[in-house]
Every structure is written in structure tokens, then in C-alpha cells.
Image (cartoon, rainbow, N blue to C red):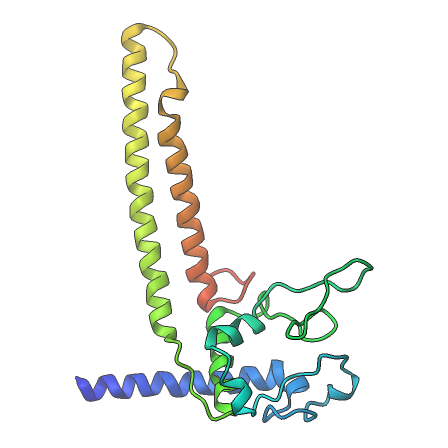
Length: 210
């Protein structure tokens, strides 16, 4: 069992590494170069400042955490196209330079690129991708349970209000169970958000579950 587990983990790691190389070559190498060195990418000469970092520079790249690299690849863009737009800091990226892949790639694919980038400067990604996926799946289960409980509580409160109104021969007062209804609505939002996070982990944005 232990040997099989080691083989499985190694297989996943090799698969992730191959995927990271493929994605990096397609989406990153035009600007960063195949090996990550500056002035290697064929778009380099036409790029405005700030130019891409040297991804092979271990002393600089090792100062960044895995999540820092992830957030650089998947982030909200700054808009500098109009007067009065966002200003670019020394370490910021904007529309004229590095694009965001937040709406292009899945979270899992971006982590694969992070892993590949780590290898370019002799590092190794410490972020546990499989654990992240398990956490997202567990969050969905928790949110589902919370929603089901909130729904039961709401239905019980609504039923009680209806029975009491019927005894008094008056219309049901929705305000009586408004708190339970709001709690159910929030639980549904939380469930939708958890399901979206799990879906977006392995599915590219806008591609659904297919």
C-alpha cells in the first residue's frame, strides 16, 4: 500500500509537471522565454516596462511565496489606458504588460504553471494542490449540510406561522419567519460560492462542468 501510494504521488507530480510545461510554453514563453531568462521571449523587444522578471534568478524568485506567483498570474488587472487611471507601482503589472489568466485558465492549471516556474530557478512548489482540492470538496459538503439545515428550520418556522395564523383566522405574517428565510438565502449563496470554487478549480472559467 505504501509503495503504491508513493507511485501514485509521483505519478501525479510528473503529470502536473508535464502540464505545467505545456501551459507555460503556450501562455508564458512568448514573453518570458522557454527557460525563463530575460530577453529570450520573442515578444520581449516590443514590450513596455516593466519587463518580465528573470524567472531563473533564484535569489530573487525565492523571496516570493507560491501564492505570490499564483496571484501574479491570476489577478485583477489595473487599467492605465485612460487619464486618471490606475498607477503602476514598481512591482505591479498592468494592461500594457503582463495579462491576467484569471479568466482563461483553471486554478489547477495556474498552480501547474507555478510549479513549473519554481523549477526554472531550481526551486520546488510547496503548495499542496491535492489538499486544496480536498478542502474545496469538503467546503461544498459543509455548505450543503448548512443549506439543508437552514431549509428545514425555515420550513418549520413557516409551518408554525401558518398554523398559528389559521388558528387566529388571520393572514400569515411573513415577518415572523423572515430571519429563517434570510438565513436560508444566505446558506444558498454560500453553497453556490463553494460549488463555483470547486468547479473553477479544475474547469476553465465559462466552460461549465463539461
